[in-house]
Amino acid sequence: MSAELAREVKRRRTFAIISHPDAGKTTLTENLLLMGGAIRAAGAVRARGEQRRTRSDWMKIERERGISVSASVMTFEHDDCIINLLDTPGHEDFSEDTYRTLTAADSAVMVLDAAKGIEPQTLKLFEVCRLRDIPILTFINKMDREAQDPMELLDEVASKLALDPAPIFWPQGSGNRFRGMVDLRTDMFTVFRRPQVGDTGPLVHDQIGLSAPDIGSVLTGDELDELRGSAELVQGGYPAFDLTSYREGHMTPVFFGSALRQFGVRELLDGLRDYAPAPRDQKALDKGVETQVHADRDEVTGFVFKIQANMDPAHRDRVAMVRLASGKFQRGMRLKTGSGKQIGVHAPLMFVGQDREITDEAWAGDVIGVPNHGVLRVGDSLSETGQVKFAGIPNFAPEILRRASVKDPLKAKHLKKALESLAEEGVTQLFRPHFGSDLIVGAVGPLQFDVLVERLSAEYGLDVTFEACAYNGVRWISAETATDLEHFADRNRAGMGTDLDGAEVFLAKNAWEIGYVAERFPKIRFTNVRERMI
Ligand code: G4P
Image (tube, rainbow, N blue to C red; front, side, top):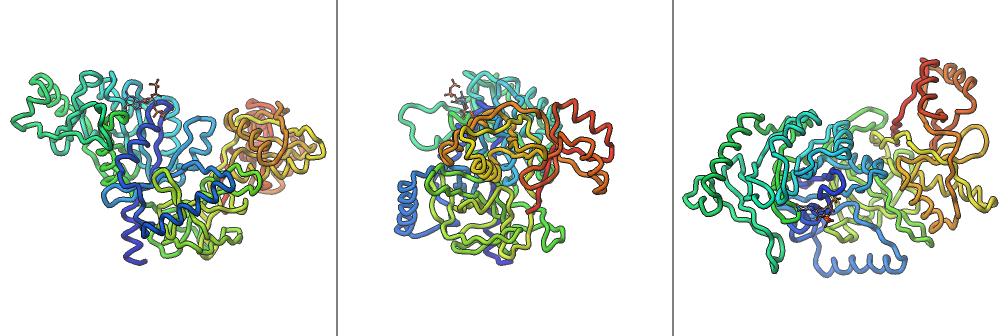
């Protein structure tokens, strides 16, 4: 392990934002980037001239091919930290995509609308974080609007999420009566002011000690009494912040603010800097032996958590988003997947601020984009030796199943290939019943089918429709012995099939049937999640 590697790892924070639509994720993202100021990754520090050259190289490719790679990750600096913010899709139909992105995050920021508290999508995403023990920082947003009683919000976090809230700041008022917030650790009060016409750049909010002689200029006597009283109450009523408890996923430090008014955003960044974990160990098999890959291991390793399609009909290039799990990556490196595929990474992309550029180096914790022609798929592990296999990225049993049919019957084979390649990208899942030649496509939400129809048409020239089919539920199946599985298959021929990788599935007519067969065949395991190791 080199000292340089250890240092670079230590200053990285890779996180995602989880929230219900409209809570303010987009606004917060924009303001984090703004606050991040010089939007430039130190890992890729270069002479300006060179920077310009690589940037324009990329833009040329982009122009020529009409590629548009939306930002899946935004990298910026805060003090000495390199912050990688992973973007997650807002719509719940793409929740699988969100799940995959969270596998690449070391921590999460949960944004709550101060007037609404915990909403359904927040809860769902929180559960995903809990499954993976992802530590969560809470940001209570929109304090410039009428908010719920902040203590009730904390109680909601405690009761609905079974997470200990530890307020780091405490607000005074909300909406028109919002005055600012006190740092409970230092008693420093940050004064809220609304942005004025003509304000540019990140707003700076004044700070003043609660005991300072001129505190009366920002808080009335009543407000000061109220703030002191409630601060005392929360400090007595909630446990003090404990780093270990947060890192283990039991406690969440709570921040307040208004993303829109750039209030509390810097404090949130400071929280990420001070509390959020640096790149975590990743569970993997190394030469077949279960192990934890430490970020400061010298060998470069990583995994593909997302494929970004560029919608280029002529080249059909794909950018594999690779979360580096260990080592110092250098441009031109050759990496191998767990299944032996080799790839030379000659034009790795980093997503700096809202731009992208070819980078010469990247470190564990960073995300690089690896352009390839469909060689890499979601869940692939990459390493220098090809011996490291990370615990795979799971597939969830889809809730909507449809039969794909193409207008021109001569294109059936073409359709099969296209659906396979889009399933490898993680757009939708693909199942093949043993009986007949139907291709069954599975999705979590209907919007996924819209994306699929569009991409099949634009990239593959296929006019495809998706129709209701005989199946309305699917489970992966397994058993102790092959005989048990054969016995089950014999009795349930109509429902047998395989997924994209050839794993056995049971395709059910409805949810009731799943319960029914599970009861009748106790030796068969029915699961709604499948993790591959590749
Ligand atoms: P999302 O990505 O989580 O879906 O939320 P987004 O940032 O788009 O914010 C949703 C709305 O909430 C936006 O309003 C945005 O301006 C507003 N908003 C975000 N943060 C704050 C805040 O701190 N204070 C206030 N007052 N508003 C905030 P919009 O789309 O412009 O219009 P509308 O929804 O208000 O009609």
